[in-house]
Length: 300
Image 1 (cartoon, rainbow, N blue to C red):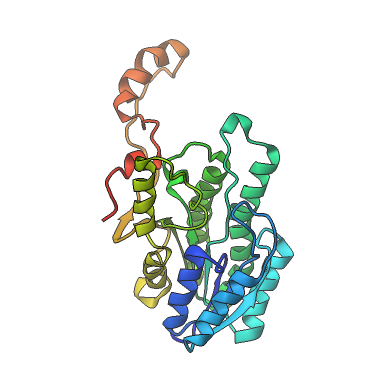
Image 2: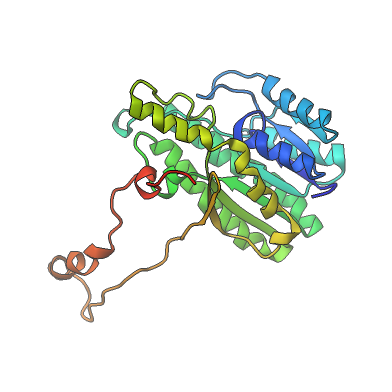
C-alpha cells in the first residue's frame, strides 16, 4: 500500500476510522471522508473526520479531510476529484459510510426507507461510479464495500438497512464483472464490530449485558486487516467475493446458485405445482433466520 491513495467513506468513526488508520500506517495516503452525522443520520460535524486525520498525521502518515455527503452525486464526484488533485491519483475506495433508521416493517416510513437507501446503497454507487472513471483510465483499482449479515441473512426491524446492504452485494458483483477487463477488483465485507450503530443496544438484564459485552470484544479495527489485504497486490486475483469478519474469524460467504430443480415435460399448471413443488423443494427451503441464528456461537 506504500504511496497508494485510498478514499475511505465514513472514516470519522468505527470501521471506517479503523480502516483509514490501518492503511495510513501501511504507507497509504488517505482521503478521510465523513459528513459527521449522528447514528440516525442527522447533523453535520467535521470533528470525527478531523480527529481521524489528526491521528494519522500524528503517527507520521498522510491524510486529508473530506466532508462530502456521499448520497449526493456531485459531492461524491468532488470527493474523488479531491483525492486526485491532492495526491495525483486514486488507487482504491472503501465504502463504509452509513447510519441506521430501524423500524418494524409495517411501521417504517417512506423517509426512513429513502434516507437509509440513499446513504448506504446510492452513496456506495456514487463514490464508486466516480472512481470507476479514473480506474478505467489507469487500468487498475480496487473497491471494498461494507455489507451486513442483516442483508445476507436477515434481521428484525431493518428492512431498509437489509435491502441496502444486500443491494451493495449486487453492486459489488456488478462492478467486479463490468470492470475486470480494466484490472479493477471489487469485494464486499460484512463486519461484526462494536460501533455507535449498535452502541444503543439495551443493557437492562444480565443476558443483555452479556450480549453487549461480547459485541464489545469485536473491535472495529479488527476488520481493517482484511480490507488492507483485499486492496493489496497480494489479492490481485480476488474479486466478486463476499466475506464476513467476526473478531478473529473470517468467513467466505456463499452466493445464490440453484440448489435443486423440477421439470414437467407438458409445462406447469397450478395443479401440477400443487402436487410437486413444495414436496420437492421443502427440504431446500431457507428458514426464516436472523443473523444471530446463523452465527449462533460466541465470537472466537
